[in-house]
Length: 433
Image (cartoon, rainbow, N blue to C red):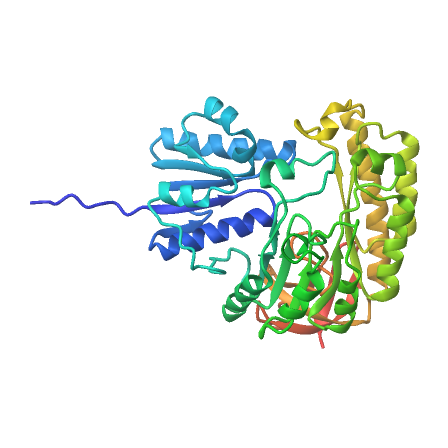
């Protein structure tokens, strides 16, 4: 007599959007594993959890298309259940329930216990720092705060992520120690705003003290700072960066624009003069620092004159790293009350012009590296090259160092001293010293 076998569920977590979402997916997967659930990341599974992004139009479209794709698979019997979590469902849950009703359940950004319950798992409070990392084994994102208190006119993040909430230093350190024990050598500190860290808990900006604690974690060789807001930046961080070899000479500081009238409309709380002075102080105190920034073009009311001012400033400042985005008109933000008056083709053209200036700057700065030696971490092997990064480069967004794999063998996840022999605008070629 044949007995009916119970099919074992496999949960597939699909991550869209930024590194904060990657982190949230890893926490979810860690919880599921602790509940003895079989869980995979972006592989085959009969139960699907889609961690969505709702930041700007392109990201929302990608999220909606991914949901529709898995709902279709559910209708065709390829998957049994589809759950949606993250920023898109936090922001648009009522609309989504109405428009895509075939999803089993929608959850917001703070409803992890509810999502786990729907997946037949319990939320385990004792799992501080237990995550299933999805990044290459040598680096991991470390989220030190959630939410944002800034009033930027174009940004929907506070709608989706709530008010700023710092994670206590001791909890961040526990998590860092667990990551290091698993072989992670580079911690990439992320938050909606690193600058604000500690104000809610310690009544002062406390990023420097957190860094002092993290450099003591054994096994960690690099600590990288992402997403620091320019207004109120804690300058004591620069002293720690200059003094502590583990802290990368790298700072990601989204500046968005430079024209005073645009900055005022964006509600950034700063001016061209203050921003330029801040960057000059960075370079004076940490001369080797690579500064990464992001800019927005095509914001409501941006005239040709505003844009020319921005172009000139980018030319003058010579950022080591820069990304440029076109403005996205987002409902329920302060800027949504303004007229989205820059045509889409003008926005794209302006972004391209900025990136053209930047690629020339990047090429010139990279030429200066020829003949120099750098400590490089090897992230992966691709074709005939080992691909690594210097401390001045973050994964996925910055320059890479390519080393000929036919001539030398390197271990991924390890560090090597590499001499640069050739350079393009965003790639360096090197050989082992």
